[in-house]
Image (cartoon, rainbow, N blue to C red; front, side):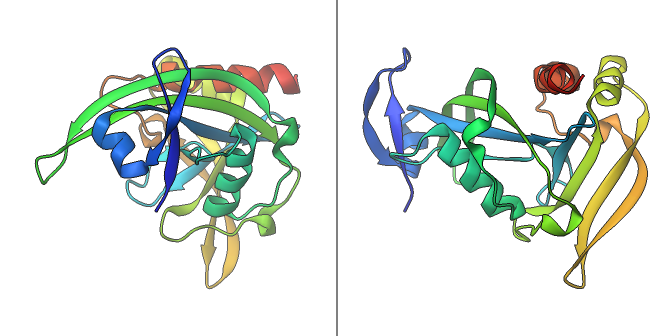
Length: 206
């Protein structure tokens, strides 16, 4: 069972409870959104298995007693199989997230999360990845500036590199990706959701 530290709405630590109880009671907790980039200004999105959409490089809950950067390192390892030194990861921002969702059994899933958004440099290669087949189909690598321009337009395609696994071997394919392939919630725009991360990577790599 996973346990999460929880906080009041001002960020004061209150204790810890199981992940299920945190979401049942709607308690504030920390998550981490992990983004990897390269010196050439490219950024990695993961391809989510559940939706086929492109999302953060990796993301998840910060567990009881865990620092944000420890969670960053763990999530990257669990979801895309990379061993990285997250100590020099750079904070983009902390985004409060609040959502209530009625589940199929009629209970309410209450999400009250502070999403800690960080970027970190990736210096590996295609063979470095080992995807969690239960969650991730692969990764998409694209230029941050080109992505930002695409998201501003809200329509169209750009060239990207798709890395997936076939027959236990990582393979690479270059193809056009459409703006609608990037994951957003109903009330979000793709530009507002990803602009801060992309701007940070552009700033770091220019």
